[in-house]
Image (tube, rainbow, N blue to C red; front, top):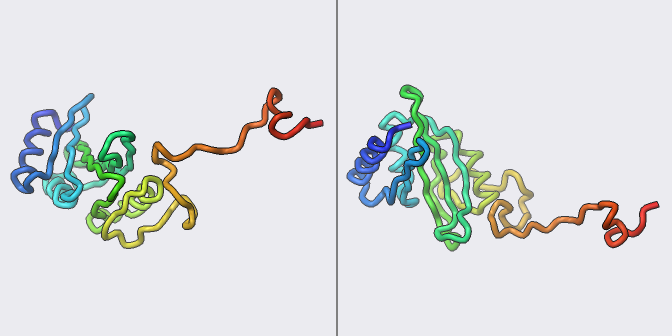
Length: 169
């Protein structure tokens, strides 16, 4: 992990190269994280690739309910030569949950972006095949959002079998 000083220097480099691209930084428990403007995610990741973070180790969706902007996309970048990792967080609102796709830069982002789209509803602009990957195509809603109704069927136990299904004999 880059230390806190290197994180701040990287953030300043990005701000100098791309105005207002980095909104904040977090360094917590040895994890370095850049809080990014979602409209500038591609230039930020391109800059990090130039610094040696050439591998997109993972891409995740996050729901920060009830805070806005509520939906987040977390990119974990890895520098394999120095064995260092840096995270980039970009948050989008539920009113317009859009962010640029990075599949053209990192082909391995194809399925993770589809999963975030399916589970959280974040639309990745420019994705070559953005469609559901886990849920049926006609499914309504996004099950990993924190306000998604849980629902389900009652579980049959001996104390509630009569009220749910009648007496089993």
